[in-house]
Image 1: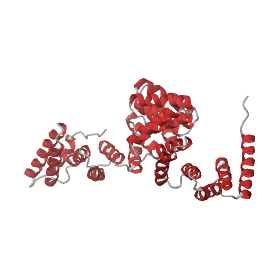
Image 2 (image 1 turned 90 degrees about the horizontal axis):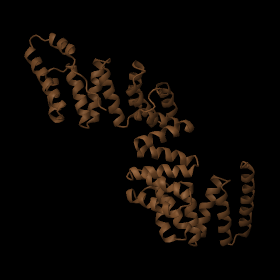
Image 3 (image 1 turned 120 degrees about the vertical axis):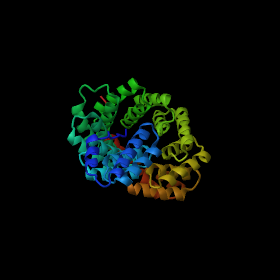
Image 4 (image 1 turned 180 degrees about the vertical axis):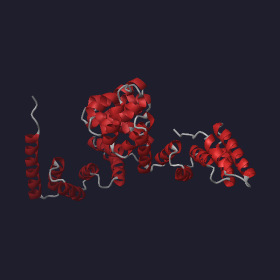
Length: 375
């Protein structure tokens, strides 16, 4: 989405008017600018960059050469150099909106989102109704976890643009991320279906999963798998939805696919390890859970599964140490208390086991009382 500044004849004329004794050099500079522009238009970035630099060596204040150099550097992937050139142009010509857009995009592409945001905000302030700028600023807000700001920015621009994929995607994402899922999910699923977008199906399925709507989540995620099984994180999410629905063969298949794509996928290692452990397959559960713990040593669910593994393999003291730490951190963790009671029994600590069972019983009563009754 790099914006290439148009050669400004007036600016070149103004620069040429200031020449006297150095007129031949200025002419050579402008010739190099023209040659570079032709090379740039034909995709010969190496030649274009060399021509623009030659023009600037002859005439350092030739703004259009510097602007085009920034654009060519960015197109060649030399983002830091592009940012430097764009910044120098804007010091001289702060009203140059094309170069400011180039600078914003370069910051975005290098992951400097706060600087990108500042530049997009300046452009948006100048042209509040410009859709392209609003979408880019919305994407940046979303990346910065400022989805509510993105939603507020885009809401007034939606009428008449309900079928614009780029707009609806960033707006639906913002709505979902800012807690307005009832408004965001139908939009995301509508465009996912209309455009056969695996990314949109993944976002919708993930949101449905975290809402506990497992049937719909699985359908959305399966649609994404059918369209683009190589989408990062997709098989992990699909595995979680299938696991939650207790479809263990399908969940196993999904997690295995996730680990083939990325052997260090934390969730896939943890959840597939937990499944293997539940099946009593401690030999295959062990390396999965150990890697998950190595990846995230403080994750409570992984530590609970390791305690279960220790309990099943006779390492009762190790299991007790993990569970005691977990129950100190979360005194209301029912599963941890019940398992600790069983471990204390194996360690011949009947009083401690009795105490844990009593705690677990009390927690269970409180949780049942706090659960809303179904009509």
